[in-house]
Image 1 (cartoon, helix red, strand yellow):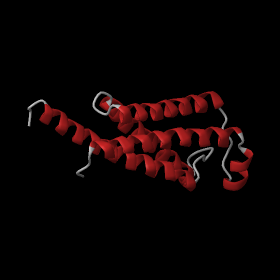
Image 2 (image 1 turned 180 degrees about the vertical axis):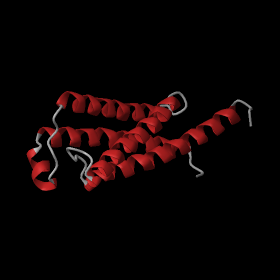
Image 3 (image 1 turned 45 degrees about the horizontal axis):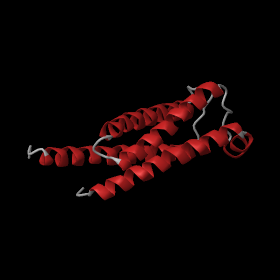
Length: 146
């Protein structure tokens, strides 16, 4: 991918919106769970303290992506943390999805609709990795490192 600084700035602006809007949706969906339970047949959230803390972290990551958009070279390590976070989130969701479908989970909690964030996060993880490769090349070229 031969992208420019402007392209990667937009990537992180969009990535920030993805996290911020996703956490807002998840927060209001969980706190107004009747709609989700009625339409998707999912179990309500039982431990809001953990759920809300997870959402707070996802929200902060979204703000971090905006910091990368503002200064990609200075804040490049946030992109690395984003890759790790998105991969761990995806693994957790897939494990619970498979457990729920296989009948081993006492409370299957992941409707197939909620695999969309997993797909989105995996796409962002790949794009963030592309950014890190680009950033390293441009930084080394600027330092005379080729």
